[in-house]
Length: 514
Image 1: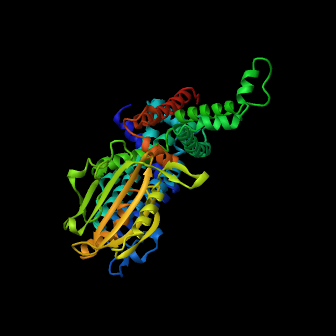
Image 2: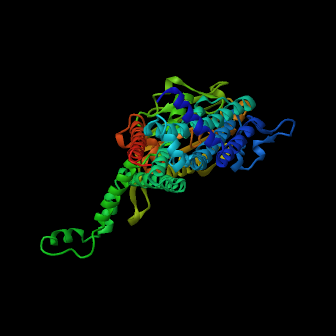
């Protein structure tokens, strides 16, 4: 196939796409988020609609729209990232891909129509060349739409809001990669059935099934990792399972064996997971590429990956000499204006065992963060020098329930606002001490923004027992992970699926007699 024929095939595909109403609708929908990124400004303390309108301050907005009492540059960036994820990952990555499948599903059926086939195959064009031209034409046009969407939003947020995030550009590649898996299957079905309707419907079914099977496999792997599958098997088999096994030599077992059902379910999920394309991994791959390009190294990460702090509290900096002292005096962050303005200290130690209850009900148990915080509140109640009595509360830190005690105490430099959060992870107890001066606006602002420092995405607790299956899988999924969770295996197996679908389509196309 020479260059002239390749151009002719590409032009034919282009005309078919541009004449399609679904494709036109997709282009129109793409323009909406791009315009929004140029017309809405996201700033540290407010949102600006168009130009000249009154600003809408973050503190006056409800939480689900990004409202907060502690705004700042990082909050504006978080809202923009949420908007980007909603448009690219959810709408474009789900509805957009389905629209693109509908817009390109007729590529092969039209070629295989009687009149079109006679004209096409009378030329010196191989059937493999026609198949590949239709496949790459679909990738090209979807890639163009994805690039316009992502790059347009990238420019809009950068020029209007001053937020430049080059890692966001990986989103265009993700959309093409995701569509490429589904497009290969769509072409295969189109060649086998010569029906664009069948290609659309069956591809939609595959898209749903691949996500469902991958989700089921992920949950099963999560259960296995927590060593709960054997407990589940034992519970289903019942306490007399061993007697049934012994009696199996002399007679038939009564009833079925739930363990066989579990093994069949596990095998089925594994086979489906490894054969079907890994559509659910596309967003995770993009997130890893984005972090590699955009994010800086974490302020703190323990050697056992049990805890990670990505950024220092706003207005504070890490004292480098304390970085490796998590299990000693603690890692320390001091206010930029000086240690007297405030500090955060995070330390951990082995969970002590304490006696709970009295009399016959007395038991010795590992201490929890909640118990430790309540014990601290009781100890502080006995002090007579405090300026404000201790108050106990609890809150969630990275999915872990923590006890919190706040109080005010005197010092040589004036009153101090004190706070201690206690939480446990596995065999470790953690304490975060916050010490802030009540003098000075800078210290007050830094203190009011403590919640952002303790947010889930900043304080990452890598404990399998506390993670949801999706979060657990995202943590396991890496470039150097075992092959079940390996990024390269995910990409390679998905590319193998694409080649298999194109191979089946070419085999069938070569045997069609027009």
